[in-house]
Amino acid sequence: MATQYYTATSLDGFLADTENSLSWLFEVDGADEAQAGMTGFLAQVGAMCMGATTYAWMVANEPPENWRKYYGDLPCWVFTHRELPAIPGANLRFVSGAVEAVHGEMAEAAGARNIWILGGGDLAGQFADAGLLDDIMVSVVPVTLGAGAPLLPRRILSTRMRLIGVEQAGQFAELHYRLTAGPS
Image 1 (cartoon, rainbow, N blue to C red):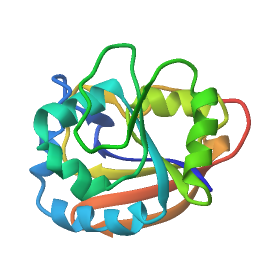
Image 2: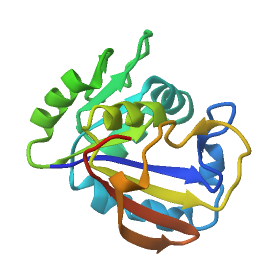
Image 3: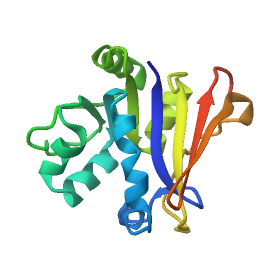
Image 4: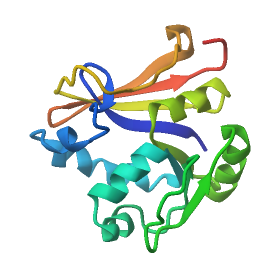
């Protein structure tokens, strides 16, 4: 079992634009080809989590039935300090506080499968700070945003990261880094 931060980023290192929108991601030629790789990835995921901003964007921009279509009954922890609406039929847990306590619950739910940190660079950074992040998997998109939500607003030195995979999916460059324990 691994805890994996799997996300897409603009070429200049942003997850979302200044309005917290992901619409730029779906406008790229070849996005369907990159999306096709998600099926194999999701088959290995037993639990997932995301931050409140990512969840709120999904609620505002995706039809509720898409949750079931993409994630089925996969348990999802949403880290938040505010009241958020539940998506009907989604297996959700709204939580706050340190990631260490919640990680144990997620690991138990995932069993032998992986934990996916879907969105929130700061949330992924909290897992990295706690020594609980095993992989960073990033699809680099041929778009520059100039500003927005950063990919990973933490200092993680190259001594902690090893490149273990590079693939092309359409116009996306997919990078896979394995993290080791140690100081950032």
